[in-house]
Amino acid sequence: MKVVLRKVTSTPLDFEVKSNEITFKGYLQYHSGKLILLKARLYGSVDTECDVCAKEIKLPVDEEIEFFISDGVYDDEQASVNLDVVESFDSEADLDELLHSEIELIKSDYYSCEDCKVS
Image 1 (tube, helix red, strand yellow):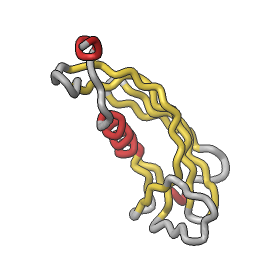
Image 2 (cartoon, one colour):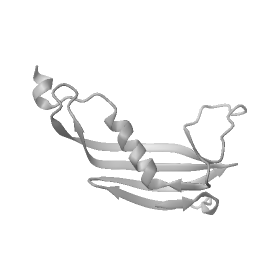
Image 3 (tube, one colour):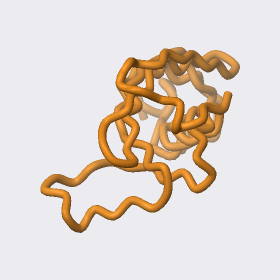
Image 4 (cartoon, helix red, strand yellow):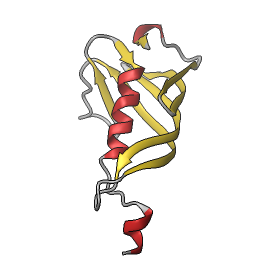
């Protein structure tokens, strides 16, 4: 699902994207300048592997996600606070790609199955 950033206003634009057993649900809202706020909840389960024995495990996920999307290059030199910003160079937010990125970020952490936790 792609959203044209210039069409996002101060009225929240709701979205819901699903992939396998995980849901990415929230809204996009104009913040200031070239920044669009993305606020969402990521929930469901993700298949990953135990980092000890490589057994496949199902990882429960329930996370609040919040970051900004910049329509073009984000210049933070004048910002007084550090923001999490994703840059978009085609004036679109690809929510499927953002969901995939969040899933991969979760899977990149260290996990062990119940059998390996006991050892």
